[in-house]
Length: 439
Image (cartoon, rainbow, N blue to C red; front, side):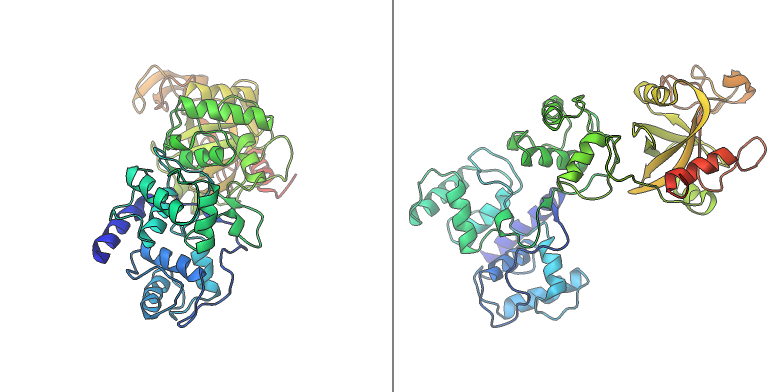
C-alpha cells in the first residue's frame, strides 16, 4: 500500500510545481529553528508531508523525527544543494518554506466539485489520518474526498457537511497537517509567483496567466473553479472588475499599472513595471550591444516587450534584422498604434525605452520610423520602392499587416548606425537615461 501511495503522489508533483507559489524571504511556517532525530513536534508532520510529496519518504505522518525521516532529509538536502546533515537547520528551513509541496491552504473554503491545487494537500491530510483511501491524488474535490471530510468532521465534533470550511481548515492546522496564512510568522504577506512580461492580453495562456488568476482569486475577483491558465473572456471580465476596483483603466489588459498594483500589495514578486502614477523609477541594465545583447537575439525568432521610459506604455517587437543594432518590427497593428501614440506618429526621434528580455530589463533607445521595407512584398527578397526612400534593395519587412513598412531601430550601449558604422550620440544619451546613468 505504501509503495502504491507514493507512486500516486509522485505523479502529482509536476502538476503541483506548475501551480506552485513562493514566499517572501524572512518568514517561516515552523516554530523552531532546528529539528533532529528524537525531536517531537507537529511541525515534523509538515516536514514529513513535504518529503512524501517529494517522493522521498513513505512512512507514517506523525510528530516523531525518526531514522526514516533522517534518511529522507539527506536525500532532500542533496537534491536542493543544502549541507546533507540529515537534520533540519536554517538553510533547510528556507528551502522548506518555499517548497511548492508545503501543505499550504490559500483559501478557507473548499467544496465538492471544485478544482484547485490546494486540494492535493487536503487529500494528503485525509490519507494520513485514514479517511481517504485512493492512491492517486488529483486537484478535484471528488466524491471520495467529500465522504472523507464528512467522516473527519463527525469524528471531530464538526458539522458533517462534507465541505472544507473554516472549522475544518482550523482543525487540520491545529493537528499539524496543513498550514495557512495565519501560521506564517515574521512576514506580512506571501506572493503568488512572478510575471515575466509587462503586458498580458486576452487569448494568451500559460503559467503567467495562472499567476494572474491566482492573484484575482486572492483578491476575490474570480471563481476558484476557473483557474485554467487561459486568458479567456471570463478572465478578461474579472480583470476589468479588479481594475475598476483599484482605480486604473479597466481595459481588460494586464499592463504596467495593474501589475504595479500586484507588486504594491505584495501579491507577486520579481521585477516591478513602473507606472506613470509614481512609485520608484526603474532603470534597465546598461549592457554592451556587441558582447552581451546581440548574442541574446535571434533574427525572426526573438520577441520581447518594450516599455517607453517616460510614458510607461508598452508594446511588443520582433527582431527581424540588424548587425550594428537591432532592427525590429511591431508584432501587431495594435502595437504599431501604441508606438505612434507614444512618438506622436512615425518619427526619427530617439526615446529611452526598457526592453524586457529573458527575465531581464535592458536599457535601450528607439526611433519610431519604419524604413527599408514594403509590407506588400515578401520579406527577404529584393524589391524597389522600399520605405523612406531606401529604393531598390533587400526588403526588411517580415511581419505583415502590422501597420508599418519596414523596421524601426533599437539601440543599446555601444551599438552603431548602419549607414556610417558610427555611434549615434542621441541614442547613446537616451540609453544612459533609461539605465539611470544620466537624467
